[in-house]
Length: 226
Ligand code: 1GP
Image (tube, rainbow, N blue to C red; front, side):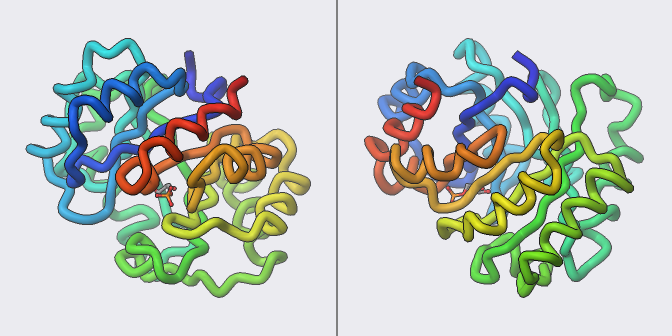
């Protein structure tokens, strides 16, 4: 299934340990895809190790290419994030240009998708690393999304609250402004209820940290698919 059809995604961090039993439970959960990515301590070795454990699992695998050194062949899909409200141009276009300089010739354009991130939790690691300006009014957050969709014509947007459950008013306003954009939401989804609340306004919900904190809570989020 192409990413446009994904409703639920588990985001796996190559730098976090995950027992085989837990991985098997996630594989058989019914999720639409695994997104591999993280901010801290991710390198080509741990990314490949996780890919290797998943490559025959039957669930679509996508790599979030947040660093040009971590590209691995074989994924079903590649997302290239650009952090729209980053404080440093490196995270808007610098790393992406480096990735294409090195690997552009290997990419099938149909497998690579830009993800326009709007990072809205100032305490998230990704906010620190990218020096994101998270102090955005609702109107400003909507404007970032509109620029990304209408001017830059990015094929997907990612409303990122990593580590906290976000302000659904912001998410709803972006949805209302851009009914046709493919919206990802991630942040603080820790069970079925949070999954349902976020899924009302976006195409794809992304479930991350809870996998490592409360596996049963993580598995319960797949209920949005039923
Ligand atoms: C992180 O958006 C994802 O990039 C998921 O967020 O880890 O808070 O679930 P959580």
